[in-house]
Length: 247
Image (cartoon, rainbow, N blue to C red; front, side):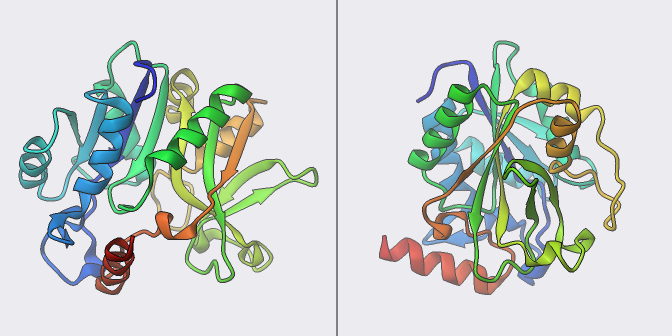
């Protein structure tokens, strides 16, 4: 566990329409356990009860299954208006003494505690406002790209739907996992607007906000892409289950 000034937010409110199922995405079984159980285990080892799970779709059942496994707090996202909106819902549920926030995705079950430890250590040592976890892919299609300036520093993240042809050629993608200084997060969340093709409030926009306000931004490249695999389809779930059984 890190120090007690670190909290975790798990985004778990989505419906997961591409799963071809009425079941909430994070409750789909993975090697005999609901997918979110794996993310929850990692979060609790890091932050204990200083963990907030954002629920929305099938909220009561997600709350029940999570509560059976750990003592955490919950934030309810009435409408799924984007990842930024989800964190806006969660932040008030974090204890007041929390100074640094790790943001995880409930549908990225293979993320390792070791990797998050490196992320937070890098973030705190460099005194960044926000540090994102990235990875380089041979085929980055479908993912948000990490745009850097001529000096190699992160300048913003652009989602696939909003990317130009040149930006779509960028191989470094955003995993959706961050370590963020709480004071900066509170300020940045208040500035988020749905100015994008999806008309959603993107959490990724906090990167651009940090850059424009001269706040230091960092990026750590993950060693293994496999642990950052997100589950969006039944095929993704089968792929992750294969990797889990082989580990």
